[in-house]
Image 1 (cartoon, rainbow, N blue to C red):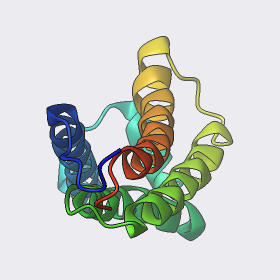
Image 2 (spheres, helix red, strand yellow):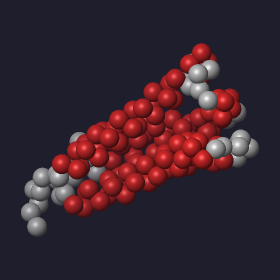
Image 3 (tube, rainbow, N blue to C red):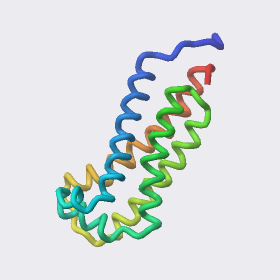
Length: 139
């Protein structure tokens, strides 16, 4: 196997989509700091933010900003991407602990969008960053 394998087009597509996903999370984090903007969120989302303690806010920030940094590192083919994605996943899980413990009744769409999707994407990016490193020795 060659030590200078070029990355498959799917690597660039996954990396770009991961960066867009996580940048959207960063924007969501910043928007939630503005009470006026937050007033346009669904009631369940407003309740989550209103009751979010500092540790969950830190987890949320680590999840989205870590995910964006990890995505950029992935695209730059830096080995540290894997470790940053692991930290991001931990941040997402901390956030989910608060969300699940909030006592708010969620509908199926909210469960999928607020809880399942972030955990699934974060876990996938942890796996994919390791997979990409093993497939391409330029990392």
